[in-house]
Length: 134
Image 1 (cartoon, rainbow, N blue to C red):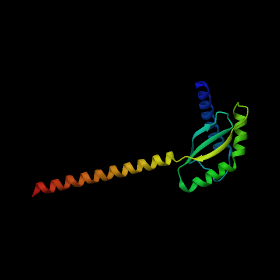
Image 2: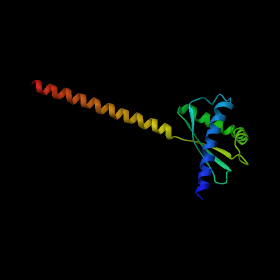
Image 3: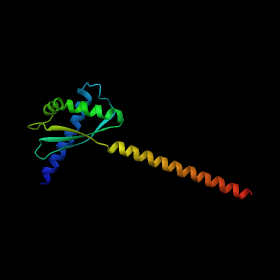
Image 4: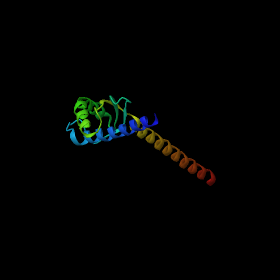
């Protein structure tokens, strides 16, 4: 049973790598540019479906990118079938993954909080210096 999950994990990772390569190298759609990442692929145990998680950093390019991937899913699936040694290529389902964008947002919030705290510490130090001069 554990070997089955390891096999599925290996296949999922291979699908992720190949789909990323196919999109970058073979698709010539103007809606697709280099600001995306295929973060993960989850292949079902029966190898019929693969959920492909896509992260696009720019908000205005996210919907067109997903639309381009969904419209090219058949082509990507055929190219995947030629590259991988499995009986049938899984049907690809593209899903938006917000984890990277969420991580960038959290990092920005933390920087802002840190900058605010640093500014407040400087003001306290200046105010303490003013009190000692009186």
